[in-house]
Length: 567
Image (cartoon, rainbow, N blue to C red; front, side, top):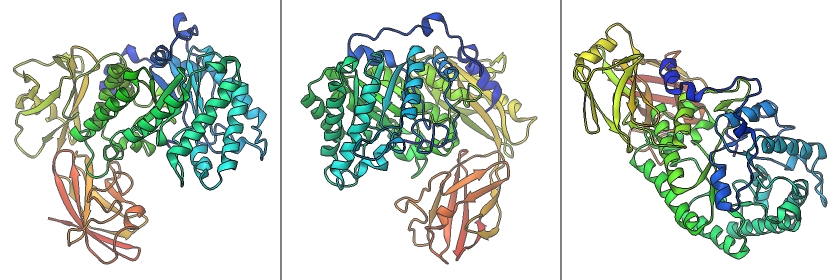
């Protein structure tokens, strides 16, 4: 799938030397890291050795002329060295082949393109990585039409794997091949069509001989979904193929409302957590417990398609902490989807060190978190003590740091079980000489894992003002007063839901609305107005992370929009 692309002191303290990132020059991992490892004897051992993994996204899977057509730089050995130095043991190289194929009946792959893919695969193998190569966006470009053009689609699919299998016949056994990415079909029996493709892929690769006779092959579920029906169908395929060198793969981008911030899913709440836990339980029961290894070939959050800020920082950190823990205890290998939104391939650095720190720590241990990473203190009211719930996750609370200082138990805070109380005296000191916004970043430290950053935020109730504009550019003037927008509801006078996703009053963050803190506005998008009835008032309720809500009413007449706050 294509994924389109601080608080520095706290982040730097969390990252520390443990998460130092090599510069843009060629990295120099320790000799043991640089030496390619021998492939373990069993598929289960191999998949264990692949953890953790990383996706070279939006590169060879790009549907343009070459690997740079979606905005990422050309792959170099230095890039792969940089990824290896971060602790990754495997790399998935998604490849879209269709635009580099000639016409039938041979469907010849452009030799220069195939040679370039082989070159990068070779670099990665030399770097010590396990490498996974697949058929990627072809799945939705033309493979999905298999029901209406069966023979032509199958012939083209077979031609890719015939040529790719020949090209990689003698490659290291650390190269694994994946049938097809996120298979989907527009008609017919999707499960049967996928089974036919997987079977054909298996036959072609095994029949090509050499190392391919026993090479590890990766087969996906329909849509790479972890729903039980799709897992069961894939398990039946595995039984029919009766090949011990097979790996199952699914993808996971979280509980959908949380993953994109829609339908009120702006917190990593009990529902979102249970969705994650249930997914891991299903793949473990269906495959891992029966000796079949599983790779989650892509994981992340779908809101990252737009930017990583669509999901609030602390909420996404809790997602990745639990995800990494479950992968460890369930014995599943995982491959982070990165289309350039995480690792800056030009600078050789992580764009969000705090996020990567949490991900990297989860490979080894659990970390303590909290109900939130934001603690709001109203500037216009008397300051009182505030209590926040800790998620200890099997760790023990140890201390609170403010910069280089350690806060004092008693005068500054009290701890009782999982309840942390910050005193009124501490909070008064932290906000007294600052305006609105983050006035201090505390580090909550635990007996293991990374610290939890807790931002103390001085705020007052946000204020919105009247506005007029058009559906293309309408924005509500907003004095945020230190607060941050979490979500928005939109309803008509009769209680019906307005705008996109009409099944819920809660609209999608950044697709229907988006705050712009630097300009002091809340933008409502053309996509939102495209599904708003004309001349019918719409009531918007903006929900802020402090718990404040502010109501606003607007009306669309043609392309003209007017709005006013509601007391």
